[in-house]
Amino acid sequence: MTGTPQATLVGGPTVVLEYAGLTFLTDPTFDPPGKVGNLTKLEGPALSHSDIGHIDVVLLSHDEHEDNLDVSGRTVLDLVPHVLTTPSGGTRIGRAQGMRRWDQAIIPGGASPVTITAVPARHGPSVIKHLTGQVTGFVLEAEGWPTIYISGDNSSVKKVTRVAERFPDVSIAIIFAGGARVERLGDMLLTVDAERVSQIAGLWPDAAVYPVHIDDWAHFAQPRADLVAWFEDAGQLDTITLLERGVRTPLPAAVASAS
Image 1 (cartoon, rainbow, N blue to C red):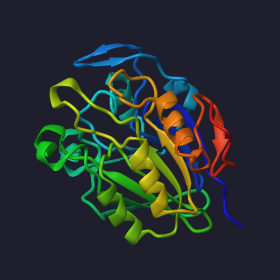
Image 2: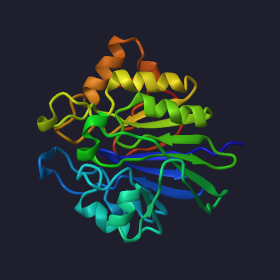
Image 3: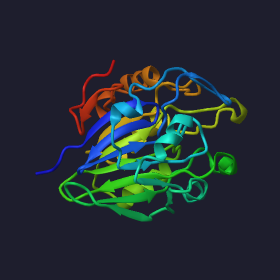
Image 4: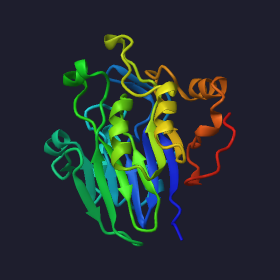
């Protein structure tokens, strides 16, 4: 019998994922709302770190942007046994393991060991990669559990196509969306918008797709309500499931009507 993962959306890109007897946390952000460098945070986290309790593994797509790793999130890293991130992030965060694309880490779990593969991602068009830095996605596998893809801050469908070629059995896809843009880079997408989420969903037509990183920040060109509206207009609302902030949710859950 396949185990059922549980996910709780903390806010932004931060998700608590219970999988194969381990507790994972994606991109830790726990600071209150306010101005953060050139970005503006609109709402604080639904849960504090103390609300979550013990975390076994942090999956950090990148460490250079405050909407993916903030001041409070950095303090969490010191309390977690395993922190996995990009090669450059591994040099900046002393206790983190930097992983190149397709590198694997095996973490013992309560149910069975979890194999974590670092997978390709690109944080905006290739012409600005020297500005946005390295970013990574992750794939989680464990015997008796569904394969999970976590995109990280990725804007490229082509990169995800490579992941799908290697991992055709992904049945849960957690996609950092929102169509992030910043003023100094004009219309360049730094994360996928709804149209690209739809294209990614088509790579795994039988997978449950969960867009996250669609809340809490002013630089999203397509926050939650706009993303839902796009899928409604396209007649594709049944292809995605939205996680509600602070609500522990079984994955894959039945796709419900979004509001």
